[in-house]
Structure formats: structure tokens, C-alpha cells
Length: 137
Image (cartoon, helix red, strand yellow):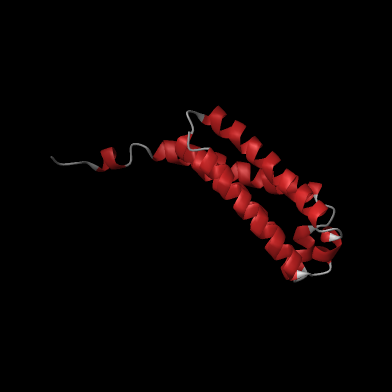
């Protein structure tokens, strides 16, 4: 049986739609997350603050994991957006819990405390992995 290029690329439009929506969700999450946190991650990162880069990277990965799972399992685009919103809420809750576990967390990250930023990133990624696994419905 021979295949044509058309058969190989017939789903490129679906790829572009799902990939584009996943990127849009990631950007939206990042905007929401950086608005909710009391420090300005992007400014801190531009200024060379490694702790801010670690904590934001962990949150982004913790969000991207369940979104990736949703792309794989979504019934449709609405389903993907709904679970993108759920992933956002989960990551915001993780941030609030981390703040309770580590008083002064936000000031520490702004001050460049890599240990606390790494702990926040690890929690964000771990919960994101569990969230992603739960989305394999």
C-alpha cells in the first residue's frame, strides 16, 4: 500500500489548532500566575534572579503537564479549555499552600532564595504530574 503526502499531513490542521490552543492556554496561565503572585517574576528574571526563574519555570511546567495530557485525551476544544482552567486553579492552589508551608516565601524568592524557589517548583511540577495522570480518562 502506498501513501501520499496528503495522507501524511491531513491532520496538520488539527495539530495546529490543538497546539495553538495549548500555547494560548500556557500564555494565559503565565499572565494569570504572574498577576496573582506578589512579586514581578519577569522583571526579576530580567534582572538575573535565578530563584524567580526557577519558581516560574516550575509553575509553567506544572501547568503544561496536565494541558499536554488534555491535548492527548480531550474530546474537543471546549474540553481542553475546561481542563486548562482546572490546571490553572490547581497551580494557584499549590502556590497558596506553598506560601502557608513556607512563611515569607514570596519575599524569599524576590530576594533570590534558590532553595525556596526550588521547593516551590518541585511542588508545582509534582502536583502537575498528578493532575496530568488524573486527566487520562
